[in-house]
Image (cartoon, rainbow, N blue to C red; front, side, top):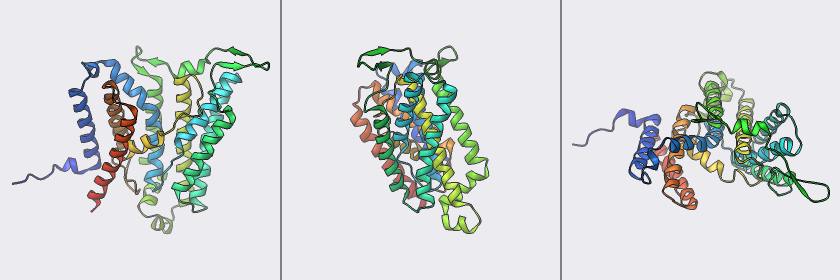
Length: 329
């Protein structure tokens, strides 16, 4: 007699937790001579996954509304470059540079959202165009070079400047050096996104739009404004991730963030948020972030090449989507 599947495993949260437990079990088996059991491994896993997790929080808002944002990696890059130019080369105060960078990210998201909401451009096309544009903008304002502490003088020579204190603050550690400040920023972003999606009327609007946009419109939901706000929030969070990326690398790299959108989507989907929209949440995305973060770390400490890690991420996305479709049938 075949035993029925446990009820908790049938829910999105249950399947997400099962995936996380499976990855942790793999780490216990393939522990790289005990490296997986060290506190530093888990601390570094959280730090490395935090930037992706910030992107995934914004991606969750868009996907719940039935959209997609392929531009988050490029927005991260342009904000990283702009922040480095302002603070490292320009010597601007972080109290001015940070709000301007956040505004830049929100504006990029707003353009994508406007194209998708009012111009009826498919989100895939709208955000693909923004992905290309933002990447080109990052390369244009940086001159195609990394913006580092090596500043070029008018005569062509170089001088070196100190890393701005704001970079060290963002990349610092707290709780006796056991918790990265980037992880704290990720936690704050996740809490705010969770409150917006689960406890605010706007979050219910997004779920209604993702479930049935026309029905939501007939019910009086301001569909266009809600979708625009989702893409702006996604761009804003991509800007936060760009600030963290610049601080961690101590430079602005116009090539940064390439492929990050794939990882962010994988975190959202493996957590259980439906790509078709209507159902999902930030807590599920947190589980997906830990799952992908630990999987990447386990592969890294076992010296698996990055190319194979990318291939595995693609396979995970397909498997998660197939699981969702099976449950809908």
